[in-house]
Length: 226
Image (cartoon, rainbow, N blue to C red; front, side, top):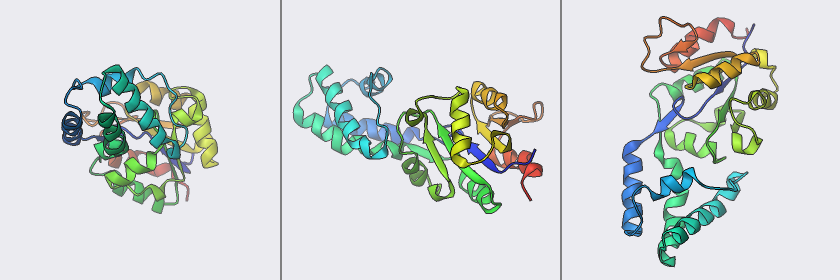
């Protein structure tokens, strides 16, 4: 079956969290609000009841609500909350770095005429900001979807079918790559050529496991449309 489109997971596939940058932001939070426990923001994120922003334009309001709620839970002064919302909230996308081969692989696939998409379960819809900051040009992607905007998340089959529909490509003509086995299995089940990226793997036992995006391209190249 020929491949017309490639769907990428984002985190741990195209990009990863930059621990140094996260540490720097944590230090900045501690400077603004010294009374806030170190893990407070991460814990509050994990228990956030919603709503999550549906559009990138809604994210500024989301961050105001997020930091206001966190500040209330920890009795932070109002000026601390305002500074956290304006100085820290909008910087989440700066915590990502691209894997060394990501930008070149995306450009290569686009130059071969394939349609490209990102499908991520990350809760914020501004996928383009994270890619751009990490050095991956978002203009190469025809579709960038956060599951929060779909109302369903991987591994729900509807997430894969909706992404293929947005690309205007049948699912059987899509290749998919993700770091989580359950997502790869779900994509395969709907008819996609699905691969798991495991950068610690030798990549020589399971043909659907690749150790880099370069190897992923090698595996799917025989199926490119002429």
